[in-house]
Image (cartoon, rainbow, N blue to C red; front, side, top):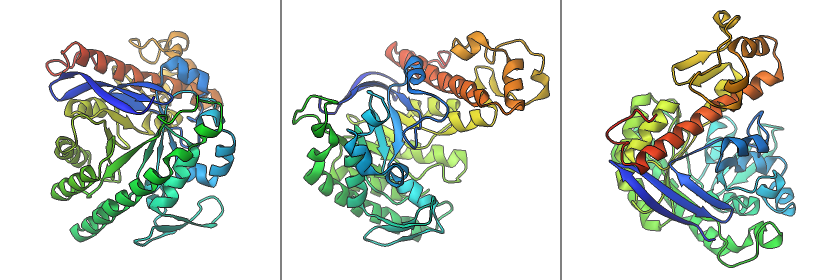
Length: 379
């Protein structure tokens, strides 16, 4: 059960593929719900399974701070810790450290930062980040990178990109030397075997400069990884700039490896990224929007806070077959939100996740049938 990826069908540039990981297979294109601290906010794991979630994203920075990597390792790895026996991808923590702009100091060696929880001092380097990711035991782990802010002068973006390339090499070197130290070999969560390995993905940076993105892609591919991500997006840049960078960068990545765009986007946007050849995406939007009463539907966005829904007996989306739309009215969901009931967050989040996941299922089916490139009716 070593990591592998195979493209099963194409329609234009869009691809339908299959990833094999130690904790199961993942059909692509795939949307990964974000479970930052080993939980998707407001949704228990059995409901995630009912929704058909194939793979979750956890964050190394947050789990490193609480409950601590060593605690998770002693409990058999993040899958056993959170009672989730399907694949997990961990972000290296680079983006979270980037977000601590006033609490961090970046050098060639790594990043010194203060915890957002208690102000305690910590240090992440490529080696330290990979040590934590290996200890957590996710199926897919990310190289430690520096995320470039927006806007950034060309010299700043270039320097950051070059350091990310050097950090990518250090990440891979450390990973190759320590990849058998995953907690899988110390627990009963999987049968022991030399082929049960995590997969380390490289990350392309370069700010909003297409030529720097090209150089970053070339240098990252030269190092050699089983998968590649495009990072440094959704950092405040206009949506059309995000699209431009993804469009320019995707063709530079190997066709036989999974391509992952980090931190995007709306349902409409993720379909567009699939059309470029993107295989994997994650975003906090469906869960964060749900907590603020914003719901995604086949008829557009719906703000459940609006008074117009106070007597509306219709489901959130008449074309949705999720458990929320099958049972509850807009009027009831508005009442829950207006009453500040926890159930409002739960039901809103379940619906939004269902909408995203159903969108990806329809997209994949359209690709498998060879119809995606010629028609968007499937989505």
